[in-house]
Length: 413
Ligand code: SIN
Ligand code: CO
Image (cartoon, rainbow, N blue to C red; front, top):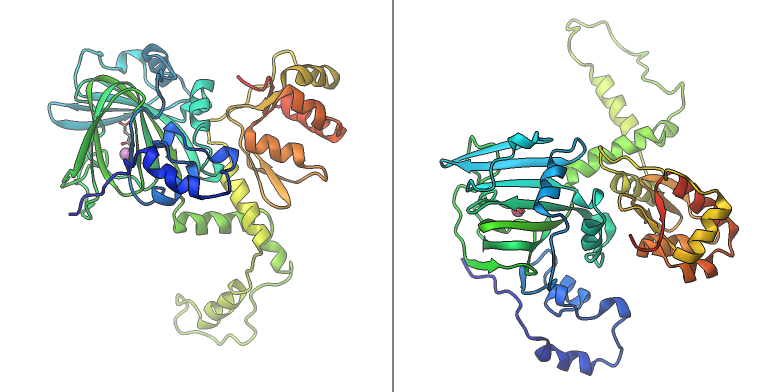
């Protein structure tokens, strides 16, 4: 199996090419330590969905978004998606949360790990970390998961179907990876563990180090002492999921129903008397085929489906309205001074004609600049608010969103 070389080209070796190009990079596309001094564009071109990248000190001086005790408390709360994986006496076990505090093993015991998905929904520091990866479209972003493990702990060698950035935030973890083709899994285990893992490369990651893995790269991360890892995951829905969900969307929105009149139904005036009543009639199959072949959709239906489906909050997400809500005038006054931001749980996506706030579609307002800016940056600074708020439809709408808990006062958390 050929090795997959990681890109370690020093920044100095690349500067020749950038110096040669007369056009300066746009401000959002500068070389960044987060991506081993590649620009986001270079990273996307060379690595995204293609090959792994090890980044030493991607986030120097990083502290875990949650301390160990805070993390354990989150795993015991009702609205967190938590899993506990133990490998005691060589046996893999998986349990789903929420957990009682006493179900969490002692931190002195080896070989267990606790994982919580969607920490970005519960904590602003985790959300801020996730936001560093917004050079990838939000439509692809899934969540930030945190795993805590004791010495020897991990989830076993496996592969994922999505892209992931594995950022070490506390302690050390040894990662081994492989581009092996054999991705068969062990039978009879409660989790996906590869039958044959043939590591090709390995590194010990320390706090601040990060490993990017495209889908289907076999990997195994084992804690060297107590450690915490953040994984920033990107969803990629399967064709099956998309087809099923899209048809459901069309049916729900009435777009399918509109394609047939109320009295348009199966008719069989030429049906003969039958000898085999249980058999599905050929005429029925043919006619239903013809009806189904009339289903059609436009690009707008696709946009409407994607914005609603990908923007819909996860099942357990609840928005909290402000405790003592300000009226519109007071809200605007505060926003002019402190700015506004989207709540960490809010998704705001847009297409050419409409926007999707937490999956709910609406037409883009005529003056939409503020909305697109808010969607792309997730905030409007106070000074910027002064300029944009000349438009009173903006302040009325933003105030509504604030009352619903989708928008907060203050440009940063
Ligand atoms: C972990 O953090 O332990 C597992 C993350 C992964 O391998 O995808
Ligand atoms: Co994985």
